[in-house]
Length: 119
Image 1 (cartoon, rainbow, N blue to C red):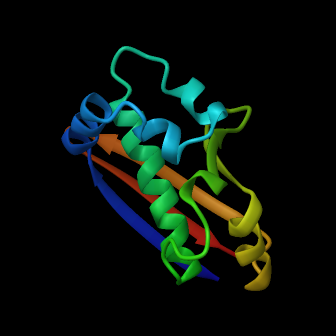
Image 2: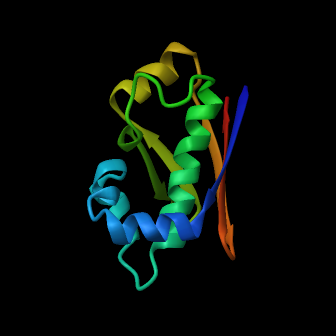
């Protein structure tokens, strides 16, 4: 079992969204981008980004050998976050013998947090 946690500054994400229109396309799948279709997406984008980084930290490698868009943050039927991994990120997960991903994310005021446990 391993744990990863990441904190993301929401105002910084707001600036990235404004200044670099390709930011969300680079790091997030089309399925994730649908979840950002709201008046103020920065909180959700920041929470998703924090969760992706937390996943990379839980692997113990950081974002090495895979791209963040291979880690997809979606919602289950109850609305809770879930992580699906694809491509090289999935291969890394399998190499290390993990078969379950438990995650949570939240945001308040200027910060978003993501936490991942790999089992």
